[in-house]
Image 1 (cartoon, rainbow, N blue to C red):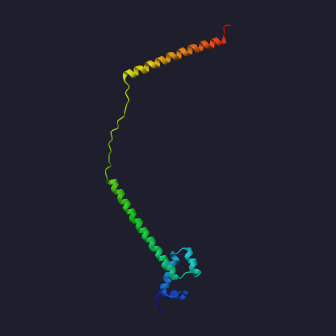
Image 2 (cartoon, helix red, strand yellow):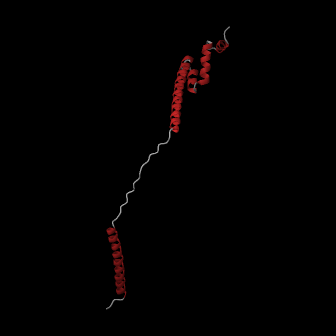
Image 3 (cartoon, rainbow, N blue to C red):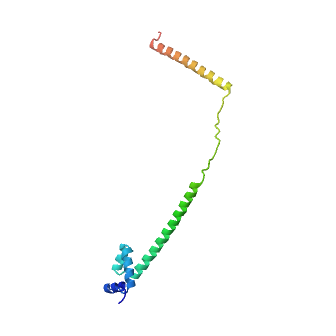
Length: 137
């Protein structure tokens, strides 16, 4: 006789125990499309098995690369966290325009004149309104 896998393989009609191991691996790991292709005999057990193994190797490499990248990122973050923060000092100079006293006096004089002119304009406006209401014939 042979090993258990050889006996099972012979009973289900797939040849050797090694072929049985491949079929078992496929059944446990393949997607439904691969199983359909096997059932319709579009691909062999060996082809499905080797394709699946290649796919797993590629995924394992990708996982390994991602883990290395994660470790590197964590290390960089730790290193940055351990660094003292940099204090950047900068003097802010605020520019203030200072008017000369002469200019301030001129501005104040113009404000006063403006008020006087508004008062005169209001006076004449009221006088004009009064004349319009009571015209002298």
